[in-house]
Image (tube, rainbow, N blue to C red; front, side):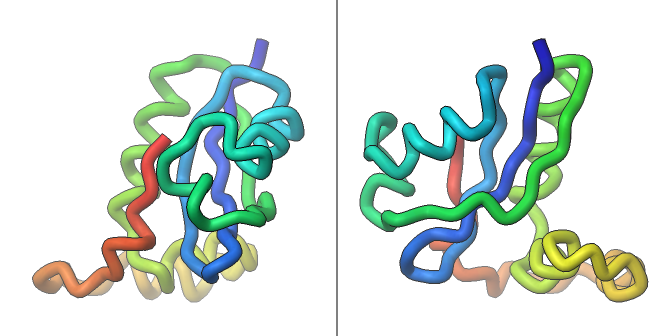
Length: 107
């Protein structure tokens, strides 16, 4: 069974990053139904905007953690498939956290 890392765009425009070991469309439907409570339940509807498949759970969890640390701009470049912009953003020096806490999502 594959493991997934995914990004949802919430109804308020924020992003939620999660991982799953179930059918991805089912997981999105669960978020939209509010089945898991938490962050996305208060920000419905949600829409799947990015997904990446992994063979192993530890790889998916590691990528989820990495994405949660990314800025909104980096997430949007990834979602858009803008590899040049993503490369530029990855080279930027880290600044003190100015991220919107709403973009941190868990899952």
